[in-house]
Image (cartoon, rainbow, N blue to C red; front, side):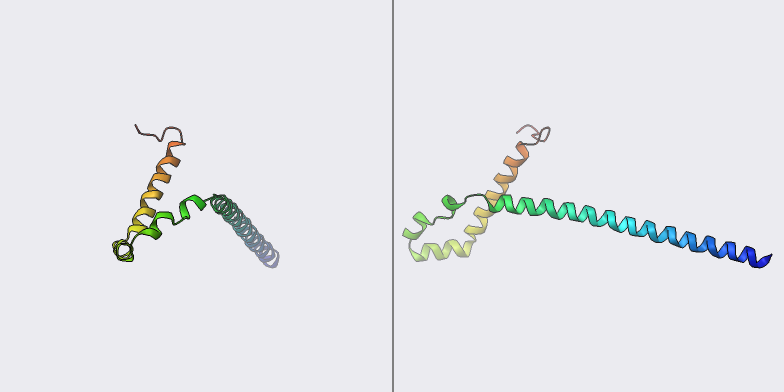
Length: 106
């Protein structure tokens, strides 16, 4: 009789272990699905940003006519990074304006 009970308990332990492993596999599958969706969303955002025509902004134009000393000082002061930060702030603000209920009086 004890052998039958031990066999039933061993089968229950095996079944519980199987259920645990199946749950872990399903959980990993769901996590991978979420990561895959996030990766595809970011890939789409990168391709959209890469498709923006920035040829008008990237043309040097009048910067080439400035003396090299002024260009050197502007480079030392971080003028390029400053303009990049300001442009990013303006772009974020314009992007937030497109979302309803985020305008906050602006």
